[in-house]
Image (tube, rainbow, N blue to C red; front, side, top):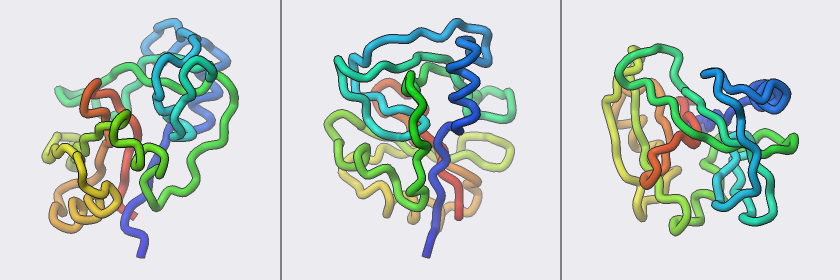
Length: 159
């Protein structure tokens, strides 16, 4: 049974960022050769450092401007990439690389108030997502974030 759905940044959003070269905060988008693994917030695939070109922009994954609104830096591939499609499981390349992708799950209620936060650590993130949704009916959606940089990776909704 499909219990959750991964929501990457949309192709339309990425295309707009690539075309306008300005993010939603009016900042100029910076193009650079990848120095880290990312991931791209559209494909949810890691970058190859020294090889892939990426765009750095400010993004807020929130609909409501409140104290928990956390705009911050994210990377998308500079080239057009396929959007992440295996939405009923967490991206396997991120999940498998715990050295480079230390993750935190943060849960929000329908008023976009933070009601949950846990380090994934050695847990299986797919199992953890299901357990969080099963045990916390007040959580409307989760964010997967870097536990080191706190930057947004993707949204996870109930299926």
